[in-house]
Length: 181
Ligand code: IMP
Ligand code: MG
Image (cartoon, rainbow, N blue to C red; front, side, top):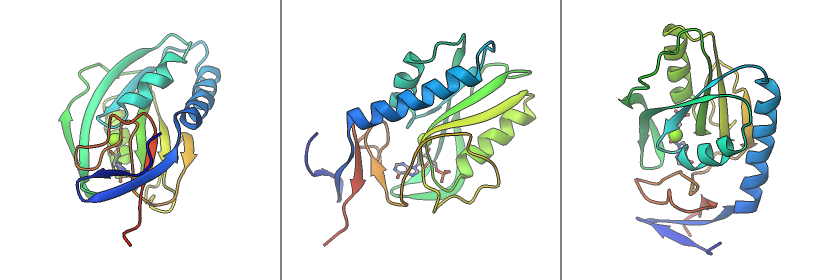
């Protein structure tokens, strides 16, 4: 794991290693395997940020399942715009399906709130959320975040799929913003 990394104007320090992330993802997949036994859930991967997490998670899911993708965007720089844009629709019929939304991070909760609502309106029979990271201090949603990998403080993180203005998604571990001195 590299030491300090610089992306655009900001510096980031190591936060969660590949090994630590692996354990967190393993715990999540175990819970999902138990909960969805005998069912055929439809995983909806929320792009772009969740691609690396989803790949590791789904390799460990052993129930019959389908996988689809949805692309949304709400962030600019290090803060939420509060407006969720759908950049690529899911394109799969969700009627009567058990949906598991796979997200990298739930921050204010606006993105998952909107997506969850849309899936319900489209006729899904259940919609649950599986997120790697959750920032409880920033959360403003009025719904339950069903499966949380780990709760983290309200500080910007990058790596393992997450970006800062487009950069940092390719790192295999997670980095946290370094306070400016
Ligand atoms: P929310 O709608 O505020 O919950 O924001 C969720 C989305 O914002 C996530 O899917 C991420 O793409 C992005 N996001 C939130 N916090 C961070 C962070 O610390 N680093 C990188 N992206 C983040
Ligand atoms: Mg995301």
